[in-house]
Length: 420
Image (tube, rainbow, N blue to C red):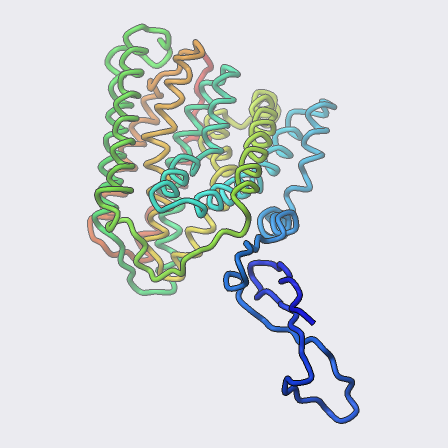
């Protein structure tokens, strides 16, 4: 009897092969046990013939990416109610909160599919994919708000994402990591590079200030200065990618001894999942943006607080938890990469991208932010730079950054910026 064909199984388990056992084979059996002509030979998938063993795509995606995140995945149950609330017009408050909750797991799923796609490529292309799609939710929300004419929401959400990563997430990493480890160290070169780039972005926000007051949005000089500054920031971001992915990769490599990851789904599934999730994010973010006016009027919460404090939670909640978790495991370079890297990417890529997109579609999106917010942005960068001046951290420095973020949130709660 000839050997049967291999049986394809999940990539996380060894493949099983049925092998014939002839009379000449020495097989031990208990007295009275009936002889089986087959035994199970466990073999690693890559050693069986020339077959490629792919995971069961649908069940793998549902189990590990869509439904495998505990309470975060449970939030997906709000998706049908979010759709119903928008089309039934039950009230802006319900529409806002239901879509707000739905967006949190979608942001996490989008990040997972981005990572899966990157794992199917080499280090350079994978790094470029992660860098480009790392803040995809912020990009989608900002562009939706821009097309809806909600420039104040665009400004607030982008600045709020930077504040959140720079102060709250980084501070939480230092604080909770410091509770477990008396002192932790991090890559000073990478930290100083990120802080220098954030300082550059603050200059771009200051440039339009001498040319117009905040409400003189349509001033031609303000528009031209903002658009030119946006082009320079995008050029600087391109140089950052070359620096990280080509010339100085050794600085940004993970030195924590983390195991190599392998893709859980095929490349086709990763691309399809990325496209579908992006479309869902665009859909629900559109509902979210449309409900902001009614929500702020009904709740009395300022649009500034909604944009700078609430909306950034949508795209960053899961990422924040991840950063704090790895910091508690003493993987501070990885945690810093999440917190500082995301802040730098938003300031050098997402912010200037909204200006360019506004230029293309005829919306006067500028870098003319409220002066109060620009001042707090510069002071925040200055505060974080002082904390990072020494390549070690502790819980007290984390508490300092968290306190700074809470103080800013209190100020934004009372800030009332009129729409233009």
